[in-house]
Image (cartoon, rainbow, N blue to C red):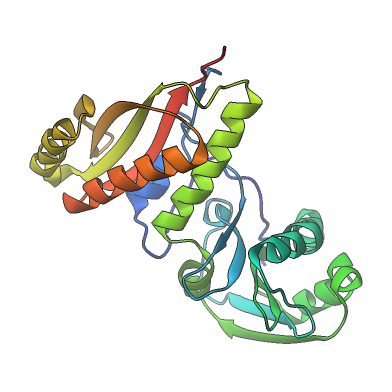
Length: 286
């Protein structure tokens, strides 16, 4: 039986999640530089918190597909705690990050366990935890003896279904590209601040966009349009089987400002069939 486990990912590999493509995954998790003053390239963290369009608050391991390979005969198991709910985002984040996440991580780090724990959702009705396994009975045993039950309670229902292509994870748990970028923006701004960055200063912020290899003309059109929006075009090059377009512009790096900028570039990229990959900048200190 193949062992599955969750881990911090260094590279995303085979599958892309809902509203994503392989180019987006490929570049989002790569290291681009060893320069410690540059923040944003290949920023990684497993767990991301966001609110879905359907109103659920979701905590998901966004790099699980780099740690395991989906295959035939795998089940997605859902554990529902009916007595646990929340009324607002602050409460949801507190429950998911202080109760659920530590318990899931403890399960994932237990070498005896053979399951991949991929996410949890909570709303005003209940809490649900998702895991993938080849052995349903063994996974139920893992849950019932885990710290999760001790932290939350044993009022739970367990259901499962075959999900060989991880559609549940991709369609219901992984954030769309807009939510994904919002999560990354928050992480990068926090990382900048931890390095002493002054976010009220103007930074040169670089944005990387990817295009399919046969879309070089569209990449050039994107670059031309970006120039009219006062972006500097650093390069448009064919590399590693894709076309990379890098543009830059001076911007503050507080979360509100950088979110506005990234949404602008993402929309422009979509207009020409490109995929927004990441942004990065140098630390600016006093």
